[in-house]
Image (cartoon, rainbow, N blue to C red; front, side, top):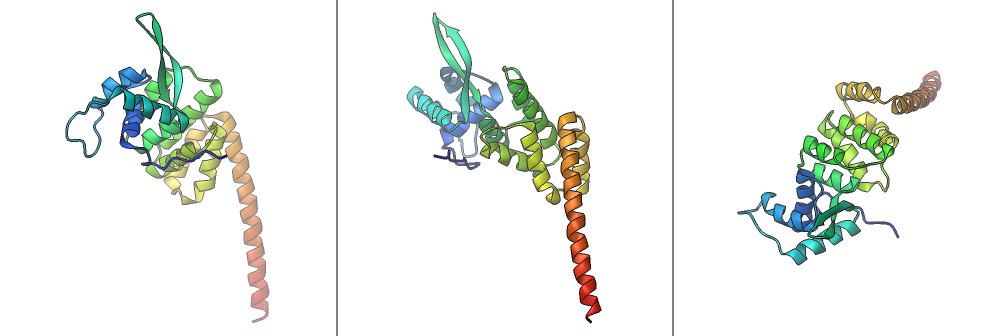
Amino acid sequence: MSRKIPKYDYLPKLQKKIVLCLAQYGAMTMAKTRLRLKDVRMTGDQKPKSHHQTATNLAFHKLESENMVNKVGTWPYRGQKFDTYWLSNRGLAFAMKNGAKAETVKRNYECLSHSEEDKRALEFYFKVRSVSPKIANALDDFMLAARKVTSQKLLARLISEMVSFDEADMKKVFDMTAEFPGEWKVMLEALKKLSGMAARVSGKMLSRELEKSKGE
């Protein structure tokens, strides 16, 4: 059974506030997050609002089931250990789509332990999404939908959207991708293939036009 893909504002308000709270303040336990929620102001909020522990815990479990947050460690308190949570790649993209500050999210991400593959993917993501809102939107959409994120999959998404980017943005993407040798090689190979396909298509079109002109 396929997992439902979240829409950008599909989360109930409390779940959305939790995602934005973690994006802003970093990994926390459920209890600490609940105390911090009053500092997260959203459109329509008239004043700081406290949230019941049960409602907060249920919202956390729902977010975890939707792969928006993950357990990332434990916090010792009075002889017990409590799970700490932070954003999954999907939750991170949701936060970015909903106004989280890139530099804050990146800093909180870097405080946690990640595999080399994940670190490379998120480094590429933050670097290239800064080029323009259109490119950021394309990468955020991919992160929301993807089961697994790698830098090469992010690059593939960029290449598929390339025709909609303007020349200045594409130059910046090329310059930034060149800082990642493996991804740069993949991009050059993809561009060569696209160039060859375009040449073949244009050649066929030219031949057809020449044939048509002979019959006129």
